[in-house]
Length: 265
Image 1 (cartoon, helix red, strand yellow):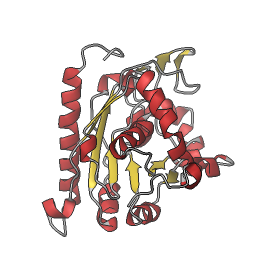
Image 2 (image 1 turned 90 degrees about the vertical axis):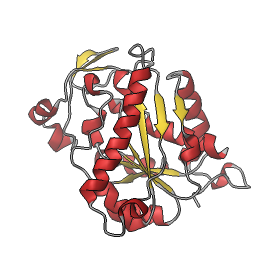
Image 3 (image 1 turned 60 degrees about the horizontal axis):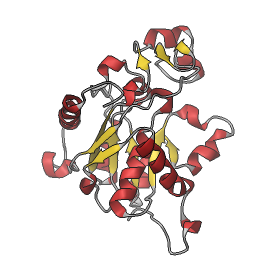
């Protein structure tokens, strides 16, 4: 079972668990966050697979943590695979205290086998930095390692989609060419440096980051996927990946149809 609140109050809780109430208040007020499908969250550990939105100020992780807290009535320990740059220098111990872990399959499998839940963003930084016009598009850029991780750990996949993150500022392009030119790929191991338009820096190549606009965020949690039950003991990885993305795209398309105005929702 995933770690939750203990009888001794916050003494046995991680930093992330202790901050969930504050994060929940923030996303529900500033972003008017709405989460649907909490009933689909299983009681045991699961690999949460989500699209990634919002660039430098992505709030996907707080949205998922809030959903788990609402589902179980108390903060649950949800780890998140994070970009390697987050662990450079003195930031490493701090990031780990917040439940972030480097992107290794061995570490991910160990977490999942312990009964805890793990959040992954297969699309990575390119997904988080995608143009605003593609805000309702699922693209993992060919990354399928999450499926092998779920199979090795023996857990289900829990697909999650969020809309509104790419409206927290205006992302004008994907920024892959600019990232190479500015050597962001070498300095920060990121392949995207999109031109963004926002406040207070106006037009900027993602760094320095503009403050996020209060775009309404809607997250939908889909039914868990038991890979072995649906595809057998030796599944075709590409077929599973296509199915996961197709179900997520269908859900995201539905959220996009409901959205009437940018930012306002």
